[in-house]
Length: 286
Image (cartoon, rainbow, N blue to C red):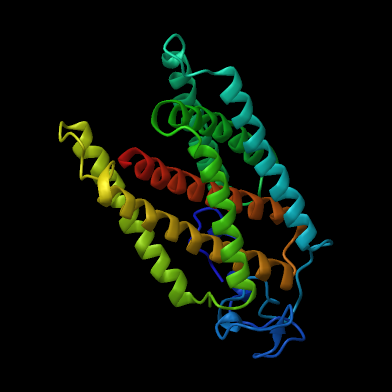
């Protein structure tokens, strides 16, 4: 099925011919990985045989190991560059302007690389790892700033919180407590659209002299808004897990493991930023 993740949503985008067929040899209602298949799987399979019954011609299909290795590589790049930027780009009074400038520049480059990859038909590992590297620079400086000036020690808490959310979603998904269907994806997409529009409105109000914008930067409203962001990130992660599972089950080409790594990394960065926001506001209020 298609995911609301802006990068993983391209999986299967050029495979419309087989979108309504069930996978070869698997009847509707069969199991996937020992679990009952979702009721909507046979309606939205982007990797099914074509209309003439022919299977994909890819010589090598993606495996879960491929996804794990490439995701670890991409996340490792984010973590490595974040640590290096924390150490090499201090945010003390003598260097704060230089560090902030590099962080903003890195964020813009990461955004551009992400957009280029999202419009490409095939994954480009160089673009994905470049995105991860520049995103890490931004996160390193941001985390150092928050830890130095707002809430010392909050970064470790945010990392642990991100792991906790991710583990919780994975367990819930594997136990089928979360049912990822088309309706679920549509709801998450609509909620995410509203969330982003509110963020943009908040930035506009702040830019034109409204002080604290819509009030999402402090107090109970800011914490509540951050918690909504964490929940949305968790929902994106469930969609990503579903997309990876479908890709492995239906035999997507191995190269698309890089798209899985890209989408999962993007979602985990989202979750980390929202957890960091919530913890910073909570500690700041205390």
